[in-house]
Length: 118
Image 1: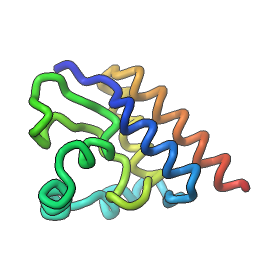
Image 2: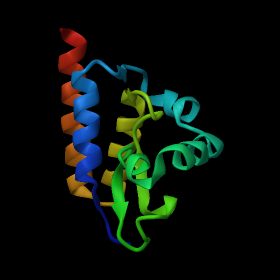
Image 3: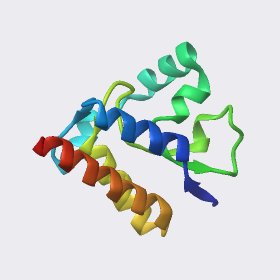
């Protein structure tokens, strides 16, 4: 599997965080906060795969751009970045040795921490 950092998603997440569009939630909250399959499908239908892909830190090169499976490691709910989503993505990236994604997630967490202090 060839999963690499989705640079567009990283920049999108960073911009949202800097605009204050993030939830500074707890690590274990992601199971409750991540979008359901139905919400994902509705988002794709309304906005297309380009916008959908901006919400996933990983891109799997084995799948085409018009497939949900191409995008991995979600970090938000299509409105806000969730700290718990970034933490989940960082953890999985570390386990799977996607070091570029793990590093990007750490950077996003630092931006959240900075914004939370301001």
